[in-house]
Length: 51
Image (cartoon, rainbow, N blue to C red; front, side):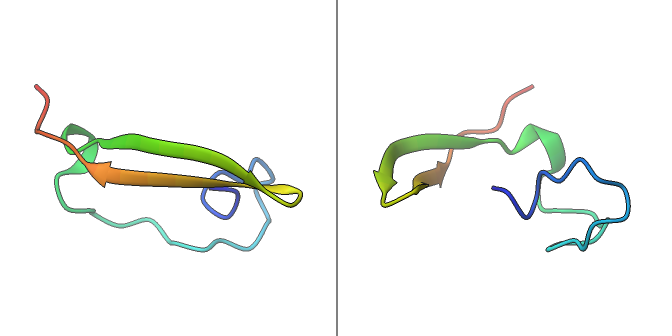
């Protein structure tokens, strides 16, 4: 998540502004969160469309 959620305006970006499939109506569901050393591994899966 860190490359996607950067608060510094001039920081390098992992992704650039674009239209993504489903936009904000196609949210992801968190399946699992676990620590791996000094970082956190987050596993997501697509979930049903929301209104």
